[in-house]
Length: 198
Image 1: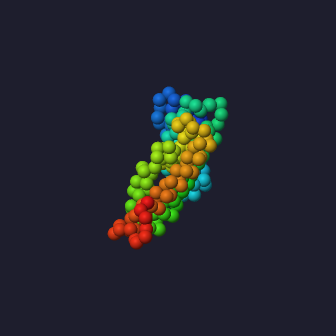
Image 2 (image 1 turned 180 degrees about the horizontal axis):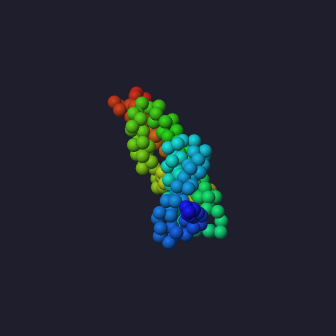
Image 3 (image 1 turned 120 degrees about the vertical axis):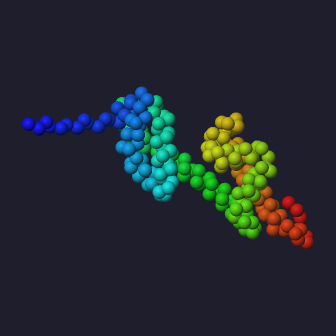
């Protein structure tokens, strides 16, 4: 008489989380395998770029692993994980928006002056470093460090309104500096007759 072969039921997400918290890294790999497609699908839907979605999905799992002690095992794991993935995607979108704003500012001024595209980033960086600290630091934190207005305000001990004003004024000063630098670059052989230096 042949023995009936039974397969052990797959562990639940909660069991895999508990095993991970107890030090079993293989258990977390099981969670990744189980939820990879759903997290990637959400990221692809939000970011609309396969490479960005793949990167966001990986970051979501890294963060989930780091935040596992905050997971409430009485709740479903998948919505908690997808919430982390959505936050990662929103941060990525915010970062791209900020980068594109800086690129637009650079293109608006530097791109029209005949300076090579590879030099644009150096020109913007050089212009940023000439700004007074009260404008340069908020701009660097907001655009390059991906800090929110609230984060900048907290870090610098300023009100939200003061940070917004400094960001706006800093962008205006940066625009003027870039414009001046482009004009100087275009007229390397000397200022045209009647022109004044910035």
